Length: 197
Image 1 (tube, one colour):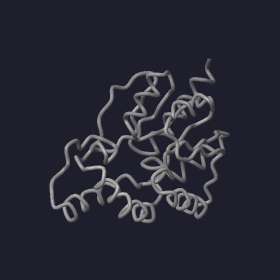
Image 2 (tube, rainbow, N blue to C red):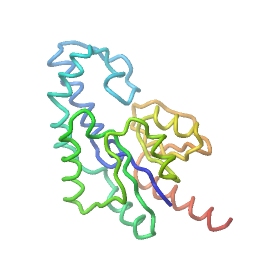
Image 3 (tube, rainbow, N blue to C red):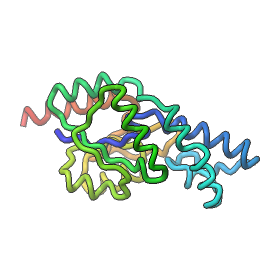
């Protein structure tokens, strides 16, 4: 099986770190309460910051978040099992787009943990295009907008949903997961279904 995989919020625990620093920035730097949509995955939609304030946040905190983030709990064990079973992993991430050094930091963290994916797509703006090009069997992402678009285009998706993010209705192309154990169970069951066909 060819598995498409996002990094932030799926492999790296960076999304919770981002949210922490967003709150610090909003309260301490902007001296306000600009949170407007808690269920949004990206700070540009979650807060009513100006473009200048967004850029200030990027410059002040993006690299800090990258350096403080680690791997998601359970990822290494499930990744190693799935690789042993012959599954391929294709990284499809926007990382490296806002801050180039974040790509380098991701590579460092993966190398430190002996994680080698089969293929990498960095600074991706259109994940649907890459999923189609790569014939991805299933895509794992934490952004509900991306998940919705992919599933509507008949690509199987696993929505790695953090607590506050928007809930989506599940269907044959969209399944919510909250940890790597659920991802392992889903892929295991999918394999069993394929074998019985």
